[in-house]
Image (cartoon, rainbow, N blue to C red):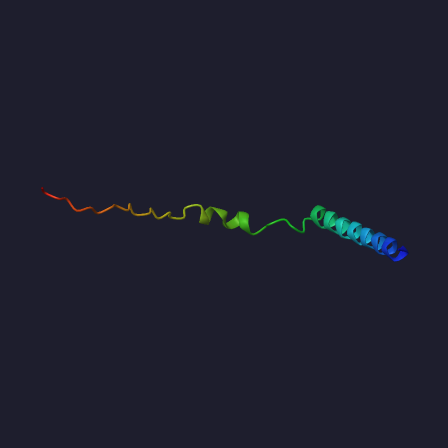
Amino acid sequence: MSVIYILLAISIFVAIGFFIAFIVAVKSGQYDDSYTPSVRMLFEDELIKDKPKKTILTKKNNN
């Protein structure tokens, strides 16, 4: 039973370590995107193709 407590404590310390590393990476600008804003204006004018209207063909009976 004491092994579970030891593993739980170690996993909490590892999780806190990863969380601190994540916070440091975010604050240092690791996840900032410096490429997309420079080319964003090139992709705004993408053509959107209209879907053709589907019609139902029916036979007309002349009775």
